[in-house]
Length: 289
Image 1 (cartoon, rainbow, N blue to C red):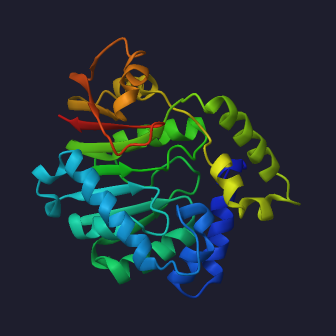
Image 2 (cartoon, helix red, strand yellow; image 1 turned 180 degrees about the vertical axis):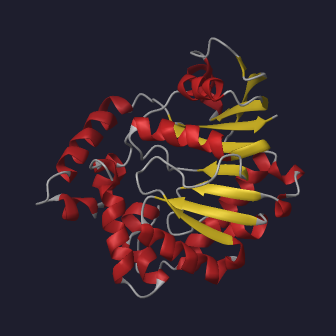
């Protein structure tokens, strides 16, 4: 990478751990501070993937993808990690490109898909610079990203958003998840900044990046407002058929209040409640004309 990105420190450390272990089950247990909501010696890759299977099915249903013949479509996943959701995507789509900033994760992702998905449909793509997709323009039918863009530097998150719009085909769908501001950020944001500052120290970064509490604070590297993403859609000049912002039921006012222009790229911006969403999360689902 051209410059050191402190927010990626736990991913680099976890990638090194992934390289050290012979089995994916061991990787899941040893990298739980990054990937899992649970930790413990009893965790297995099968459990890890099962949680991803359920979420893939739920999100595709809510986002209207079940109305399409997805087995004839291609999908790019931004932030595949070691394949928690990727395995299921290979069962639901005709072809899948798994993209991630860590090459070791992509190797483990392939192993996960071999065991729990359809590896014949999988291709991997290393996001070496943290913000560019090595995928041709207008070449995939759908782009999906979940709990990834909040881990990037703010500018990288927006660049990856622009990349998603670049690579999707006319008539395709972009499904991207972001983190926005909540009251607790008054404490979380400066605490996370302090952790990322400490990650830059060679003396403590490796140890600190393995601590669950530190990773949970430090990986929340940005907050992206819906207006910023909608501005990118406008700038992309890609005409849209439909744009929906999904949010936690009680967050409509804070999510929508700053959007002055509800017409973007030929589509009216709508909002829809998503009860399963974290209160700090929101999604944009944009269907191109």
